[in-house]
Image 1 (cartoon, rainbow, N blue to C red):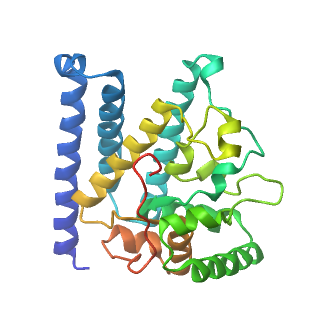
Image 2: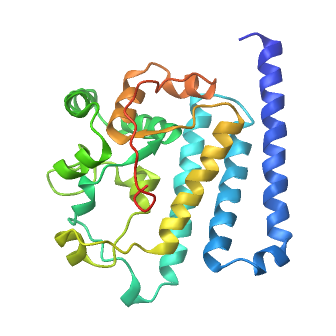
Length: 268
């Protein structure tokens, strides 16, 4: 990319970052607007604007693999901080029943945003050996080929466990799992086991959805790929695409053709 075009792109990105910063600052000072909102609305809007402002600032600098990595680091660190705070203020008898080894939700179809898939691929390349990556790629290729074209209902009915679920019933990407996984909880293990309607921790669910929407808003404003895709297909594409992070940050549509899901609002 020529210097003039690159300069124009970064100048535009800085203007967008300033716009999101002003939006976040205005909301933080608008106590009258906040007082008119329900607690759920205040949490959602505050988290969404806050994440959007932070993401826009990170992407207003350089468009490198390191910046995409920093974007993912911030997203997960910030969201987990919010979740920890929310849990600390939740009475013990109202906290999620989720525990290590409880894997009912690991068969739920999951959507993931394009930059999340790239971040997970970066972390996997950092933390897995070449042999481990080769084995994972083979599992992902088989799974994606097998389920290509399946609608969400069919994926749900067949109950295939996520390829990242390990033999010890622990998530192999738990530290950097997607927002939709991070925000999906249940107050009753029995409900999960019996496939009854699940009641998630409402504020945790809202927090992760708000952060994800903030990220999507920024990506769309910067004309970056902001669509959501099926988890395993998107991570496979990110792993197989050379320089995926930098190419995404330059505006390439590297996930074109990946499976997408149409999910109910309470599952998305």
